[in-house]
Amino acid sequence: MSATETTGHDVRGAADTSAIVLVITSNTGVERDELLVPPARLRERGLTVVHAAPDRGPVQTFEHDTEKSVVVDADLALTQVEVDDFDAVVVPGGTVNADKLRRDPNAIALVGAFAAAGKPVAAICHGPWLLIEAGLVDGQALTSYPSLRTDLVNAGGRWTDQPVVESAAGGRTVITSRNPGDLEPFTSAVAGAALAVTVVR
Image (cartoon, rainbow, N blue to C red; front, side):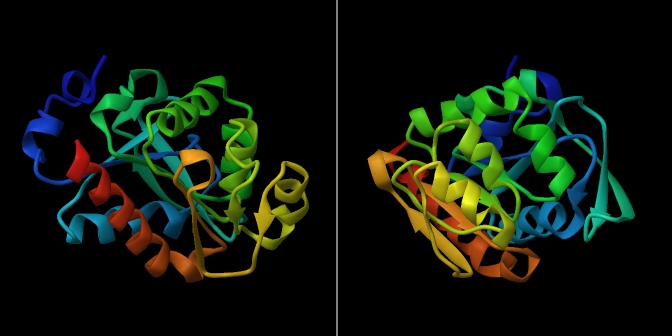
């Protein structure tokens, strides 16, 4: 089922001259700003953003992993996502969020499908855990929350401490950042990569 069918809106038709970005999370444990800021900044640039989670509906966000914050409604369930409807995928952090996603077969398959289709895959903070499970790290230059460094290196990645890292090893575009303090350059990189896809769409 496509995003159009599930949301009741012609997503691709409404934004056929720009990019459509998918944000995927679990239904809890999501770092608030890493979920809220990228969609806001992308929409300011004229991009369309759709949020998907294992269950369509409430997503509990947190600040610093420990303090409950706002609840956001996901537009789609992960099983309702059609990769062809989108130009890029973004994986926010939050330790619990990322840990749940890396154990979710639908999330793993989804980011793998984006990469296989030549579409950018972006992850911030603990989000790169999902990229490990999807087999997207080997040979890539990446960054992350510091505690993921060993995991990423063990998976074949080349870790570096920078606000945003864009890598295209193996023909896959992977964008990573470290924490909420990097959201502005992270979102700019996502926007640029997603818009580049629309040029060749």
